[in-house]
Image (cartoon, rainbow, N blue to C red; front, side):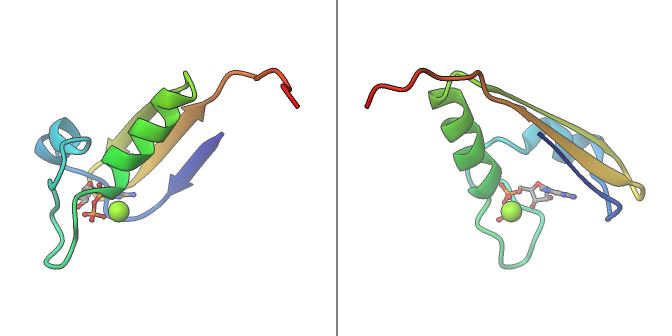
Length: 71
Ligand SMILES: Nc1ncnc2c1ncn2[C@@H]1O[C@H](COP(=O)(O)OP(=O)(O)O)[C@@H](O)[C@H]1O
Ligand SMILES: [Mg+2]
């Protein structure tokens, strides 16, 4: 799955810190969104990659392997 936006993009510093808990550039952000997302993707043995260009936008790629039905 790929989600892209044409928003503000991220500085190199923001890109280096985005998965750190409580890292936020928002005045009222929590800095937990991406950390929790990465945790969930990792628990599903998936992978998450973020590419961002300052003032251009951001692209988030999430890959999750197919599971087996155990019902
Ligand atoms: N789509 C995006 N475009 C630009 N910056 C982003 C985007 N998603 C995340 N960021 C940057 O990463 C930081 C951490 O994001 P997140 O973990 O979701 O916490 P929060 O949204 O509470 O700040 C944001 O504060 C912002 O600087
Ligand atoms: Mg967020």
